[in-house]
Length: 525
Image 1: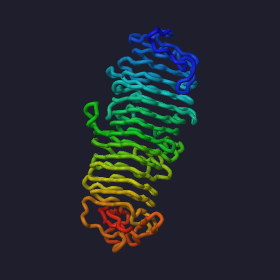
Image 2: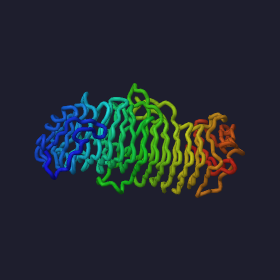
Image 3: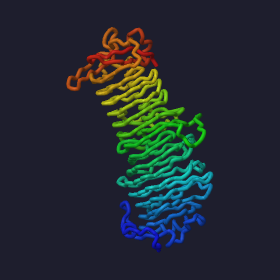
Image 4: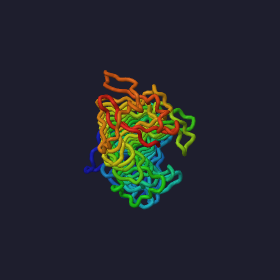
C-alpha cells in the first residue's frame, strides 16, 4: 500500500476507466509485485505475469526499472501507468522490442507517462502494439539515440496497428529527439519513429508528438489499408520524410516540419547513398502485389514547412510515382535548397526499383489552396506538376527570388487551372510543357484574369502567345469566373523550332494582360 507521502489514487485509476479503457484490477508495481525501482533487478517476467490477466492496470511509482528482455502482451484490457518520473531502462546491448503486443487476445491497451532510456552504448528499444480495437499511448519519451543493428533492421520506436476497421488508436505526446542516424536508411531497414503497416485496418491518430533525426521516416504511414491522422506534431531532420501518408482518410494537419542539417546533433553525415530529406511524402498506389489500391484523397492542411539546408532534398512535399491525388491547403512553405521544388508531383508510374508495383489508378492531380511558397532557392521550379491532369493552384502566393527559379511547371498536365493567385519569380511564373502532337482542342491551362504573374528579371522577350506564330489559342472564356482557357496552337507541330514531334515543347507564361498570355518559347528538355 502507499504511504502518506504518495499521491492518492483517483477513483478512475482504482475502479473505472482511463482514456476510455476499463480496468477492474489495479496493482502497484512496487508494493504489490515487489519490483525494484532502483534499476538493479530486471522486471520483465513479473510485468508479463501481472498483465496476463484481463482488465489489469499496473501503476509504476517513481524510479528506474531494468529490462533484460522483451515483455509479451496478450490479454484483453491492460495498462501501464507511470506516476511521477518513471524510466524503463533496457540493459546495454538491448536491441529489440521492450513491449511486444501482438497476441490474438490483445485489446484496449494503455501505456502512459514513462520514459525509455536507451542512452547506454549500442542500445535500442521499441514498442509494438497490434490489437483489435483500441490503444492509447501518451507521454512517452525515448532518451538517447537508437542505432543498434538487429535482425530485420534497427528496431523502430513504435509499431502500431489495429485489426478492426472501426478500431482507433492514439499516440499522444511521444518524443524522440535523437531518433537514430539521419543517414541510417540501411536499405529500408533503418529505424522509424512510427511504423503503421500492412496489418493496420483501423485509424491511428498521432498527436502532439516530436520526432527528429530518424533514418527511415519520422512517421511511415503510407503502407497501410487503414487511416493515419498526424496532428499538431513537430518533425526535424528525418531522412526520407517527416510524416509519410497514403490515401483517403489520412492527413497531416497543423504540423511543423523542418529540414536544416545545421541543427543535426548526430555528428558527421554520410550522404553518398540512400539520403533524401523531404518534409512530407504521399504515396497511394498498390502497396503489396495483388492488393487493392488505396482510395485517393490524402490531405495536408494548416502546416508550416521549412527546408533550409540539406545536400539532397527531392522536394519539400513529394507526391511519389505511386501517389494518387493530393490536396494541400492553408499551408506555408519556405524552401532555401537550390533546385528543390516546394511541391512536386513526380511522374506517375512504376518505381524503377520496384517493378512489381503497378501504375496507380486515377486521379493524379494536385490541388493547392491558400498555400504560401517562398524562400531563396535558386534554379528549378517551386511547384513541379508532371502527368497531373486536372491540377489547380487557387488563392496561392508564390514568391521565387532565387536566380532562374520558375513558379509552376505543368508538364503533360491537361485541364489544369491557376486562379486568384500571385506568382513572382526570377524565372518564368508558369511553364507549360506539352507534346506537340497534343490535339489543339485539349485544354492545357485555364487562367483567372485576376491572377498576377510577374518576373523580377524581365528580359523583355515576352510576346503575345496567341499570335504569330500562335503557340496557344483561346479555347474558352468564362465571364462568370473571369477565366481564359488555352489550348495548343493549331500549327505548333509544323513550326520550324519543333525538330521532332517527340520533343517536349516548353512555353513560359510571363504575364497575363487583359486575358492575353505573354511569354516565350523555352529550351526543350
